Length: 180
Image (cartoon, rainbow, N blue to C red; front, top):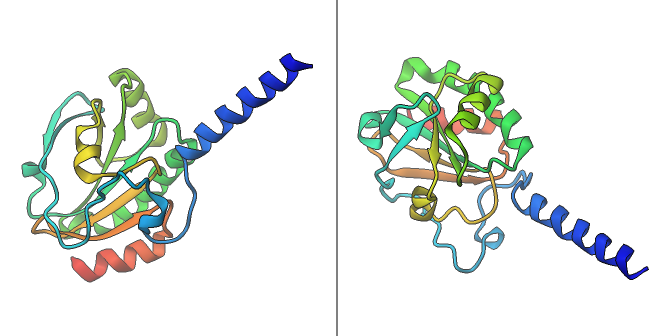
């Protein structure tokens, strides 16, 4: 009986860890969803500079994206719902790509480049998928443990808006249109 209860607690703990890495909240960013130790970037601040490797093995610098409106999406490799969300965002990428707009997806943690490349092919996206293996960019943005978290950045590199969870594509489109 004790063994059964121990197994039950272990399964409950694993379930809670998985759920913590994949939040499906539909509301906009709220600091109440983040751990007290997180310092999430606020609106109207400069996006941190970065240099990360892409799923294709190329180094991408934030400087190469200057002059574009960006939707930066941080997600966890342990969040299967994030994968379908990234695929859904491809429609936004296509809609706005002629207006100097790009989505940049950033996966955190120690994940093999081969796995990220396979993920890139599986979800069929055209925008960059970058790997933040040591979580340095996540720390600069202060993303916390809730994923995905998105930042809408204007063409001057200023963060205009933040979103926590899976925002509706239509509301994202309206926000993007307003700052392009």
